Image (cartoon, rainbow, N blue to C red; front, side, top):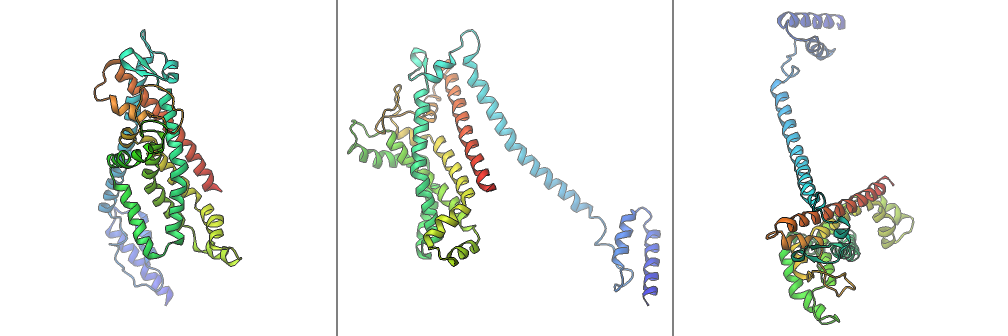
Amino acid sequence: MSSSRTDDNKLNIEKWKAKNPGKLDTDSNDYEGSCQEGSEPGISLQYMRRNVKRDIMEKVVEAIFLLCALVGVVSVAAIIVFVFVKGTRPFVGADAYSLRDFLTGTVWAPGNGVYGIFYMITASILSTAGAILIGVPVGVLTAVFIAEVAPEGIVKIVKPAIEILAGIPSVLYGAFGLGVVVPMIMKVTPQVQGQSLLAVIIVLSIMILPTIVSLSESAIRAVPKAYREASLGIGASKVQTIFKVVLPAAKSGVLSATVLGIGRAIGETMAVMMIAGNPTAGMPESIWSMVRPLTTNIAMEMSYASGRQSEMLFATGVVLFLFIMMVNMTLIKLTQKAGEK
């Protein structure tokens, strides 16, 4: 019986080859594979032949994906080239400005031809560091509360509130800082003004919370339940399980959230500009001092700057870009090492 069925299959294959002389041998092999023992001879090949229309659609979709990826890459490359060309121009040529004076100076006076941004670099570093010291612990602990501790009813209130924070425009954060934070600081500061480094740190800490909380919570929830059960099974308390098991397992995601939060803190402009004070000279001596970060310097003067002043603002942008890249690359390396462990 088996021999007879095999002979029938071979006969059908030969007939198919005779009717389809232009087809590849692989097509007949597919047909032969379909005519195995237990199947009826003469099975149709319409589902096994190459679907040309589908293959063309696949190629088109792949081309669209590649185009979208190239748009991002080309955009980044164009921005980098444009900023670096404009930003390096004032330091070359016969009337070049001293790069050393630019990076180490503490006075910004375009009217007098003086351009020093060291006190701005210091302000950016201090404000970002302060926001990290306050915002990251608060954000991670809030994520732990939402993911591990809070009852479902409270989660339904806290989580949407955090998400709403992410949608508030920067200018409203600045208005909040100017109307609430600055007056509060004026009650305790030894200075006459409330616009200060402390105000910048507080507002930036609030602004980075949505990013850190949302991503950290997702990372914490992604930790397998078996980790928690194993920890509790050997006698660890819930708090010990959270800090000794869950958070170490989720540290890669938490560090990624921190990277994005820091990126927003470094690049924030409008809210900071409203509450920083923006002096034209002077190193910040304390948290009560007025500051002028790199971002606000560019935003305040670019609209009316021209000539050498405009080029110096682009040079400030180059320094800001390099600063952000160094911070991000350092944190990404730490994230990768945490993921490997």
